[in-house]
Length: 390
Image (tube, helix red, strand yellow):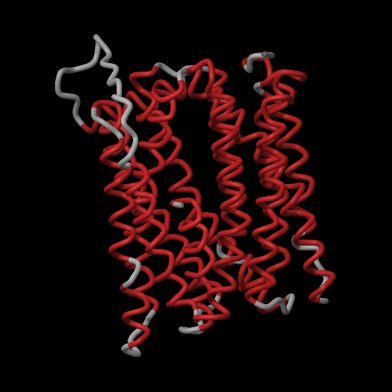
């Protein structure tokens, strides 16, 4: 439910900005910044918290915060006062809550299933996320067309309430692992140093960190431009765009189903490099999409299905390898380091993409997406000896 809600928000927020306030490329870039950058400020605080405290209450609180703040958008729309600054504020608050939710979720799953079953559990969880990718954007696009974008966001708030209620039903007692060498009252600086140290000192984790950070930077070029490109340049309707994005869930399900068998057959190293390389190759179809709606839709759907499928295989195996190799008492702070990296790089990429789009056009900006994803695969190729073969 939380994943579906997040996809509706991700789809409806830029649509509200475009269709209600007339936002342009720079406005959408700033919206992406608002969604990601504030979470960076709290990521290491959150990482230290989830390493030393119960995670379930934080998951519930993050859901309830999102459910409380999102209705501000339809209320402002009804009053005729919906503006870009309000959208930025709501995006910032929901972005922070999403980061905290992600950190707690990343650590809690290792406690619920144990490290030996992580690949299986992450594959199943990713399959559920893929279902949300199918239903969430398509539902978001349909709600925008049926109810308008602000009301679609109001419907989204209900999904977070349901999510909080479901998480509240988890009864398994959480295990908190304490490192004997850590200070009794670690400071913020201690948490930052620990997160960076455990990520950078392990060659395999370092290669994954560099690859995923580069991938997220490249994907952020699409975050601020994809909706504008599809609606304005390709002439798609909100419903068609929602369907195209939702088709990525089909690839996500296929990727979730094949991630574990692929790792068992080819090993973690070749699976990671191969999946990321295939995903990079398919991203070039986005800027190549012609301005003919039905044909453009086929290009976008192809990328969403096969590209997202390959990237899902990569992300499942990357997450599982991190959870297995990193010390359990520092999982939250290591995940926070990941979040800080992507949180800083995403707005940089979004604004850079917007600047390229304003000066050279959206298609050249989206071409950087394919180039950046290929560079991410190059990091893994260079560090392949450190990656475990199995």
